[in-house]
Structure formats: structure tokens, C-alpha cells
Image (cartoon, rainbow, N blue to C red; front, top):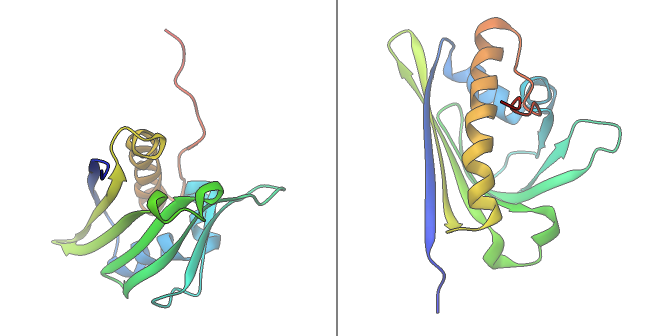
Length: 154
């Protein structure tokens, strides 16, 4: 019996250029500034990538493989918790589509092949909006958001 799959799509518009958005996703020193993590890879199709917490411990939190690389318009990669890396069923897929839209960029992030109801599916629904909002703020103002902030109690 196969498990039900789900997907998550997030679209945002950023006052930037496609090359700058692509670099912000793929260059560790830039991603650290708005994500608090570094995406580390040689970014060649078939290569592994690691999502490393940008702190003293430098913990590898996510892993995957580069599936497609078409700078500056498209990046596709697999995605799994590092603790589940040995389980092929734990992998999902993330697609970044970057397109010029008048004088800005339309960024569409599609995270699919997720197991419905899983911790990953639930987590990314909260995670992607704050990370992508921080990316937008960073590229437009030079300052990212605190992606580790917690909502204040009412």
C-alpha cells in the first residue's frame, strides 16, 4: 500500500534579478544571512547537497541530491531529514522556479512528493513561508528576518 502524497506551493514576488535570487538560494554565505542555514553543494546534476545550520555546531539537518540545475531560472533537488537519509521513502522534492516578472522576480517554490500528514509535510508549511519572506526582505532591504523567532503568546 502506497502512502498518500501531498505538495506545498509558495509564490512570492521580489524586487530583484533572477541571478540574485538564484545566488541567494545556492551560495552558502548568502543563504546563511536570511535562512540561518547554508545550502552546500557543487550544484551539478547528481551531486549531493546539505542544509547545514550556520552555528558553532554546523549541524547537517537536511540532505538531498541535485536533480536539475538551470541557472538562474530553475533548481530541482531531493530533500530529506539527515536522520532519515538512508530511507529512500523519506525523500521529497523541492523545485525553485525563478522568472522575470516586469521589473521584479516571481519565485515559485514547489515542495512535493511529501508523505501526507508527515512531520516534514507539516513542518514545511510553516517553514517555507518564513524562509521565503526572509529571502524577500533580505534581497530588497539587505536584512533578513529572524527565521527562528517564535510567535508571541496571546
